[in-house]
Image (cartoon, rainbow, N blue to C red; front, side, top):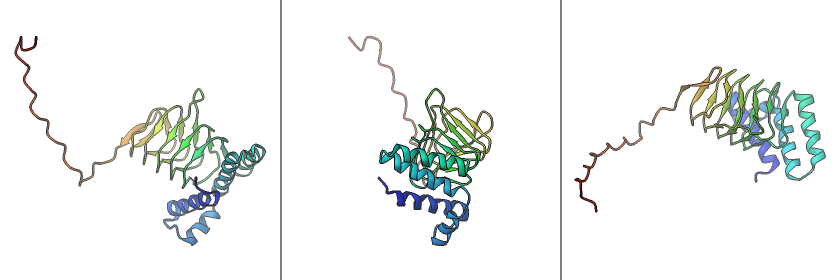
Length: 197
């Protein structure tokens, strides 16, 4: 389990790399001074308080995030290292959401439940401004959700979706180094009638 400090620094480095295309110490300092980063830190503190079973402190961090950052992240939500809130205002994330590493979220995004079932996000997922991701769906690794999209179905790995309801407009291209598929062999002939007892 990564330590609290490691998680906070990994989030700041990921934000510096995403927003400023640099993850050195100057980029990290710049990321800490931008809007959205305080919400990331409050979230990590809330997550740590939950692991330490300090429910009152967990609630305090949750309320501070809402009051000062305009960001609602449910107390059970889990994201891996490199979680980025580009801007935090208007972000609502249900407490049963699960996300992998390097999930990047822009402002006014909702990642919510339907009948108490929430999305699962893979690694390296991007959710554009104003998008809504709802219900028991899976967003594949490397997928991108366009601004204001409404996603209610699974998104394949590496795909880009846009629109209401969201539709796939781009799928990952096969690698030029990938081996060509084996040609299908001839279909075996059917056995003659009476060949089996």
